[in-house]
Length: 92
Image (cartoon, rainbow, N blue to C red):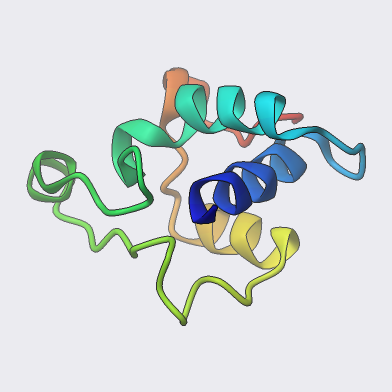
């Protein structure tokens, strides 16, 4: 259930205000988030060590209440968006 919630949150990140279903959200998460945040939202220890960054557990009480806008802001401020080498968040 939490995987679906995380997937939907990141689908909203990628689609702006457009609604996306669980299937689309999972695809976005798998493509854009999974390499750092793991299949279940837990940080990938190899990436943490390689990039020397603290990657929060997406299931944690500190992350769960955050809005899409807050999550995007954190990623931008910390310059952590590295998926696909694009340097930008999905939908930008």
